[in-house]
Length: 158
Image 1 (cartoon, rainbow, N blue to C red):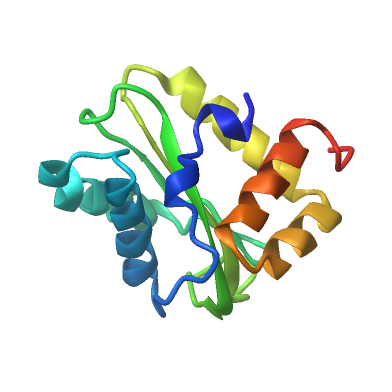
Image 2: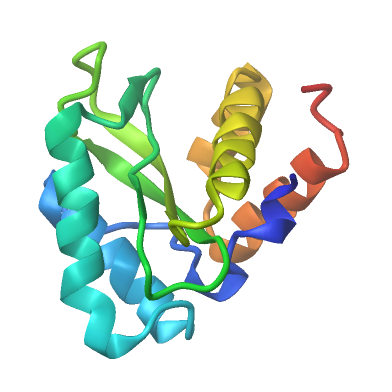
């Protein structure tokens, strides 16, 4: 699975303003709503589901990265977005570091394979230091889109 299969490019954010976990999740789901990736009447329900998943353990996986995600019946296919925080956010990460790179995923409950393949792709790409460094340095959503495309084309050797 590639980023192009699930990232809503219109929802990509190069400069998150949120300063805490709830704010980041709300801002990213709002960007998906604005891009038509989720339905307005499901907005609060999706946020609640993501926060409930966070209660099980932070999706801040370390090295400045978090992958908040949930399964939700309102989506009929895997949808996601990417955001960068210049300042970094305390996301209760496993390593205690602030998070700068966020990948948010929402998938239908009946498609667990897609969810897992997307998580695998994200974690594989994020093991590449060059990819992470360029992503953190992105100045615009277009920069991020281009990086995701290059990652999909294996230009980082991941």
